[in-house]
Length: 137
Image (cartoon, rainbow, N blue to C red; front, side):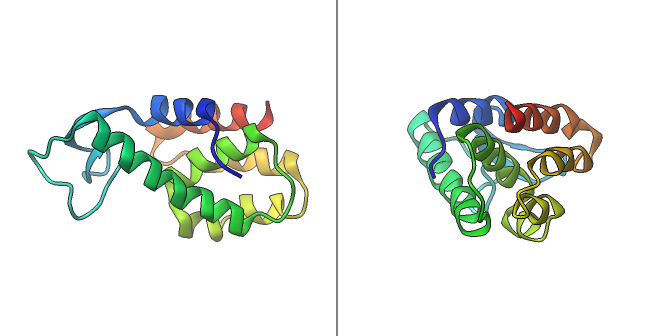
């Protein structure tokens, strides 16, 4: 599956869209739509096109993790919510998560409840509840 435009819009809203580098809540240099990496540093400025290009590449990494790891059918909203989740927590954390385990057992209700467990730091709670709502919609 691929992320829908609605999913990309929700992800961008959750992450923010910045053309200048900033430190996130963990002190990691970030730019664009939640993009991190060795090339991101203080004073870095990107064009809108650079931000959009990085977003597409970063989303493809999350999509691959979901397409490779999830063995049960997903709705578009479920997939989009998982892309946002993986984008934020990382591929490795998702691969090891109970969320993925119960989802692959076709327990969609329990999978939705797993979003409630990923609320550290507390500032992330609103995002997780938004992802959960998207997953169950």
